[in-house]
Length: 150
Image (tube, rainbow, N blue to C red; front, side, top):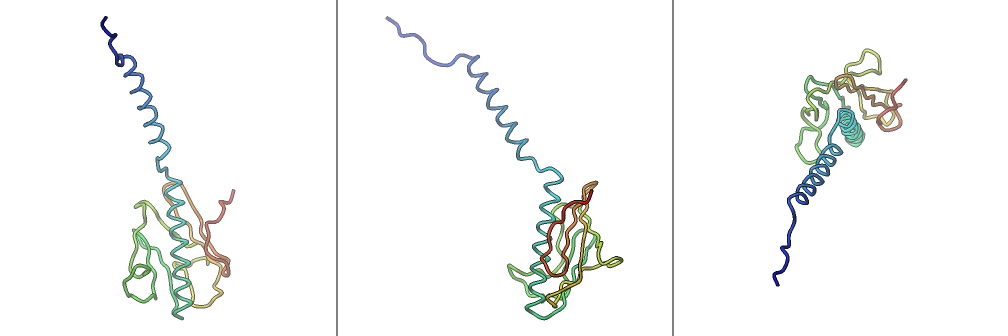
């Protein structure tokens, strides 16, 4: 007696391939980096760097100034020694279409980060296309991403 043929039919293989294709499409859509996520990541990166520069200014006793550049930003007044934690030198934005503008103090082009422990209230807005994200401090608390105003 011959044993029946074992294996998968063409229809079964096609169904498995369709399931795998849908699963792959779902994962790729879930991992997609939309504009708001890029802007939030840029904002969190900048707040961390502003706080780091503020701490370095306080420990060194040197005034540190942040300013926006066309393709990024830079910290002025920090020691120029290179190293893993060094903020010296110009930095590029993570996304090339990012722009920054200082909102507070009014008319300022830069943020002054120290060396005094209490600084003036400051705000900067990051813009990517039609998306905006405001970062700021009241002068005593750390820089944070501020809630959007209605």
